[in-house]
Amino acid sequence: MDARETLRRYLEQRRDMGERELVLDDLSVDDVMRMLGASAGAVTADPPASPRAASSPNASSDIRTTDAPPDTADWRSVLRSVDAEAAPRAPRAADTPAPPPRTVSEPDEPAATPPANAEEELVPTADAPLGIIVGSTLRETAHGPLSHLTSLDDVARAVAACTLCELCKSARNPVPGDGSPTARLVCVGEAPGESEDATGRPFVGRAGQLLTKILAAIQLTREEVFICNVLKHRPPGNRNPTPDEIAACSPYLIRQLELIRPSVILAFGAFAAQTLLDSRQAIGKLRGFEHRYHGIPLVVTYHPAALLRNPNWKRPAWDDVKLARRILDSAANA
Ligand code: URA
Image (cartoon, rainbow, N blue to C red; front, side, top):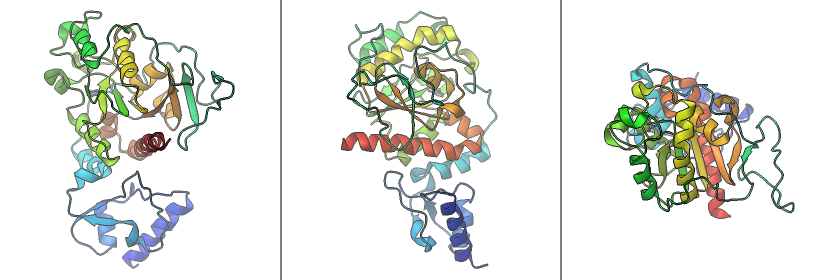
């Protein structure tokens, strides 16, 4: 069959499945290049902020080639290439439960917490259903215990001096987080790993390199966002955080979020999601919703380290990241 015809059929099939954007998750870039009769050049999908229909019968109009290396524009192509090298790694976040929930509504049900102002109708910012509502539906201060820390630098200094759990003894460096104090997006991971412990900076290892590319795919740089973790010191051997460590450390995260007050929080992995949402639900149940954390939209997705291990999660993770982007865009236009 003619390559273009094959591609046209593929796109029709995806459209019939209800897809609006071109996400070549099952076809490799090389496959598509071959179908198009091209022999060289990287293929990138459209930037997610300006989604395009994937329904055009003229398939080549939905794909563009670029001279840029594939890893600068499309993190999915990066994922494909890192898969090949992905080393097995001790499981971390997966489905380990976090501390017991406070008052929240779970996403399987409609949001149960009534709006603080009866006049106010709580509607999702983007096109995902509302999930768990933590705190008031209005943007508010979470009223954590660290209100005396009045800047992110204060938080970092307090983290550096912290002895509330044993992790400070084994860690080489505190990793409070870094990025813009006026970030519109805050990325929250689980805990520093070896590279982060060595440098004092979050997400600088392989998972961090992937995070940088995920951000680039939604037109954000690391400098524009704020990146941090639930735990600010590395658990030895990258073991899972314990409930006591999370309880001791999460006030720093809460204070960081109070100070930054971003437009969107992107929670990577079960520990970040369960801690911020006070939920014990598995990540697969928490993703796909627009949750609210003290009025701030919160999107849950798979941890970049998990994406390196499990290619099946690439597609849903990409959907989650695009949801975060849409929420950012609508917040900017509000
Ligand atoms: N994994 C995390 O959760 N955070 C980091 O900073 C690095 C890896």
